[in-house]
Image (cartoon, rainbow, N blue to C red; front, top):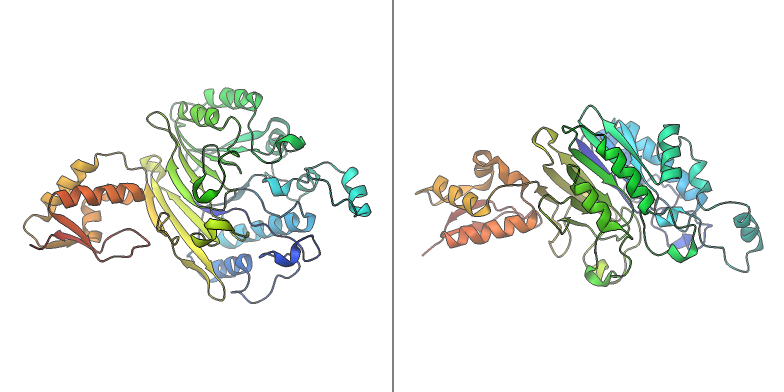
Length: 402
């Protein structure tokens, strides 16, 4: 199962406040394929299988400052992308910029009057097809209970879509995501009804459920009751949590007991990136491929937006989020290193691609696990050589020169 991830697009109109600074303008959708990230992706998908997928995922902040034009534009284009790639559906959730919870500038009388005559999520609820799901039942549950749960029978995977902006109509909760005790209770009830075989799940929400404070990105905005959500998911199978908001890509195991969910923080597809993060991150597009027949195991691929060149496979500047890596390895790294050493035997070296055929579980190594495997191999007199640093994989593994 392949998921194409677009998060934090922050589209708006040139006439919107700050619109001249936006990277994705809904009223300037230029024909130059390499001048617009969303057009480039749609056009590339028409002529190439590179971005093929089964589902489109948007983890919130389709627009910027709750621009009505921006949110309509992105919702339409996400469905254009679905049709172009042949994806089965669009899974989306609301971000804080999609909700009109902040009052307009004091000197804009017309905007103030319009704001007083609407409610914060109205632009989202007017979308066609319905947001977040074309299913009236699922969308109603999302807006009334803060989530909906869907079963993908073709892949035997559960998808949990959460509204982490549910409390953003309360101005004291504008700067962090939340999941209430009520919503957790409802989710617990639904998960308890699943059969023992229904043990692989995806959770899609906008805010980060655990700490994400690298690069001075803040430590006081973690989602309220996020750890309770993580613990609940851990009690009910294997889960991958996908979120946006931070504009900084990160893939880790949640802290806690054995079997905790993986958490994927998406980079920003076309939003502004500031501060120390700007020296590390670009605008990113991700695809997650899950080998569901083997459990929650898969590969994450990342493309970076390069002005004038389009979407290119490239990792971050500090190499902590490479352009391609796996997840789901559940073996012993020391034992794997010994097995690789035995397989190489008396040979001076062996290509990594050949070792992966012999040890297919290496496909599911997280970046930190690859680094640890490298250290275990070095203790056995082996070393990595060559390869693409942005992928972390060596060209070959061989004996150290004496």
